[in-house]
Length: 135
Picture 1: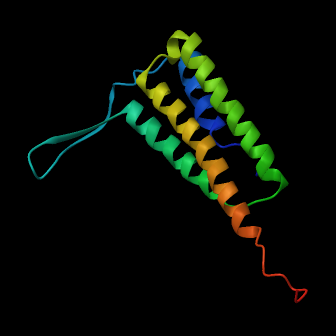
Picture 2 (picture 1 turned 180 degrees about the vertical axis):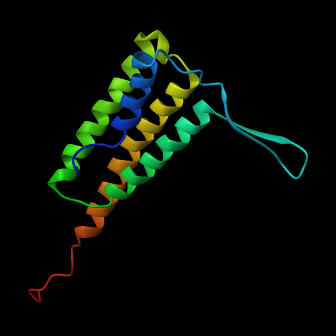
């Protein structure tokens, strides 16, 4: 499962919730509690979805620290997931929500962070030492 970008799971999850289950009210209250300050903390369904997507982003960033041939495939597939998110956001009416937009932004961060971390790690792996010939 190393070569499969985990960011595809929130994309699939969003589409399953929207198209197979008839849609989700992303602004509905998922959790609410009274704070000690007297304010009410409210977590919406969209907030929970974005939080889960951030967990997948964290795992993807951890995966990008490992360099190898599988990481190239993972980066290419992550880029395709991001492109799919952009296309869906622009062309599908049910994807024109702030929740989907934030998921698309997180997919973009996954692509940028994945390439950045891999390039940074590859720089560290490629070390050029002093000339050993004595010249």
